[in-house]
Length: 394
Image (cartoon, rainbow, N blue to C red; front, side, top):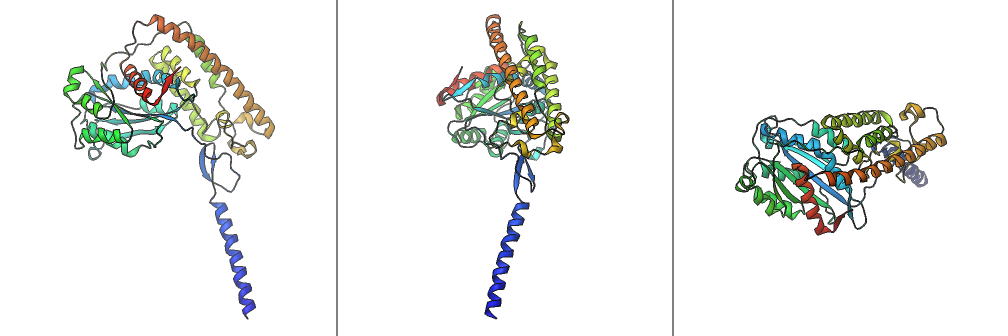
């Protein structure tokens, strides 16, 4: 009897572990081009590990009635800001860039939440950032600066790497003192979290000071700036623009969309090309230069970018998710195709960078002073504050 009981316990224990293993297999989490799914199949990609250093920029934009000019500047100057940040170096490394967007002071937003909306959490998806900027519209409202700063500090993942650059840029034109959250408390809290608050008053410099915008920046060891937000963005056309735009058409043809998300993302890429072109061909050139930099990453949907990760495995790709040109191809044929597109892209990006070097020299000589308000204010503040953490610009 004892022997029978002992055997039964051993058998039950074995069955228990087998059941647990089977259950664990069903719940295995994998990443297919950075997209997490439930599957029993082998992993395509492990979760991509980000580089250690980041430049994190949270844009807090007033979208009340009077701020149409500010939003236009943000849309028109995004790519030049990104390009300038792409030249940053820290200890011989090129940091990644993440941008978050908040809107505040808009009557369409929830009054109980301070007329504030997180438009986009920190993201390195430059196409998505562009899309969200272009989605912004204005409508009159109450502008609570302390409230939106506090909200951005609470909601965003700032991390605690001391080598990261962490910035809040808040732009608006009403007194900084409005709302139930004291701006002094919010600014001091930002400083304690190693987040620098830079304030951009849209209007007269002295009026901004009397409205406590400078005080808000000083408390967080940031810069206070005043801009003419209704000034039209200046884009300098150069003899190299057409050649750069031709390279952009070639560049777009090197992307290999994987799955339904890939198709959507390629459409988004084309839409943001059109949005940039809508401001001027020179702005479209600036976007093309951003697309040729290390900051333009699409490993979540593009096989070329995904293949750069060490965990990527060609033999684990879901054949149903492959684009039409790779349907029915062997693993070796798929690898050869992706590799050829990768080499093609590298050549195109290098050509764009060569043309951009000549373009920058031309603009430097032709431009008698760049008066692009938002762009100048942000870049000046970032470069000045980055020196404390030994960042440099090539």
